[in-house]
Length: 453
Image 1 (cartoon, rainbow, N blue to C red):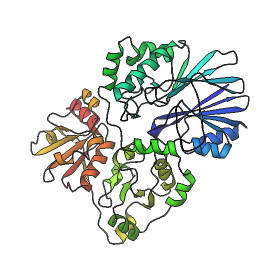
Image 2 (tube, rainbow, N blue to C red):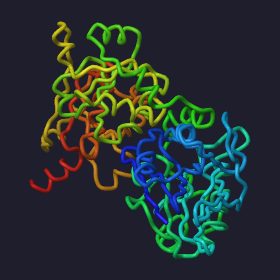
Image 3 (cartoon, one colour):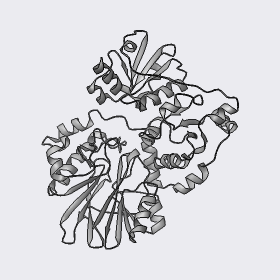
Image 4 (cartoon, one colour):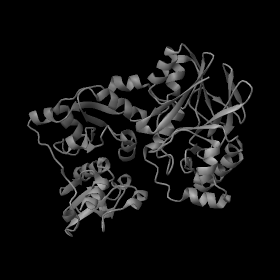
């Protein structure tokens, strides 16, 4: 038996490669198939099944591309309806590969078709369970993503309670838990940094699995769920209906643009997505550019802040365009017009650039009552401290709440470490707010400055 967790940091997403006697199954693959094909080739193994735990909302799955390349069958949970051929399994259906079996456990709640897969050894001994977005380490899945006219979040939360208590918690304590996400994913409120656990550990340590009534569980799980990013519905649709391959996305998107091309794109409303480091972006950028640095939680923030079908022009460092386009395609962004390197071509053509001033934190900055301090962290981050009298608008809500800000006033912006604050600063700049300053190092630097003083 061979198990490999394939973890994609920028999505905080885990997929799984399982092999027995040369036969392989893959669970929840991402759109770019290279990691799985490389494993199959290096191990001289054959892919038999591709299992999906549910219709993913936060990324485009690689099930279709892998199936086309390997002829492996695609398996979804009960009731799944797609625009392509699948096996829609039933509860307790079993699938054999090599000497091992995978048993489907229907666990509705996160979505109606959600399934966990129990790995059984050759003597039917339960070894591990692959829990998708039903159970994470330290958290459970959010029950608000499959809401429709006939189904409320509270209905799904009740189903989730039953799935956890009547299915997963009945498994032996030794069973290894392999979840679909780690910390940073928007699919759970407070997921742990750990990416594996056991049923026993989760019984003891997961707040959502402690003894409580179904009513209390529903109330607790629904409390404080952040708004789902706009791209979630778009990705679910692509995962259900089908999509083009990443190679075709690259073929149409890998076009180097001149400054004239960029200006034409601006004139017709293209989004200028500058993926450079914040400390380079601040020194000079094409006006109206949004800075979402490639080094952070890049794709999820794009999905949160940019409409999925937008035409996008990428501004990046040399030789990074293919990686950026691939990462955008992972979350369903395919309408890439092309790319340009930095701002040199733009300047050489006689165009103007914009800049954002960044400051090291100093206490006198925060006592000036004529300057507004804007905190763009999430609500639960405020518990570690905040600047007195600061205005709190989480980055995910900044575009909706621009009307609460005054374009004639000055704003100092901070987050936890400086990544999100530059995103927010660039959005404000693009919307006509000229008196914008970023705080280097975010609240961590502010806190350290106060300790040193």
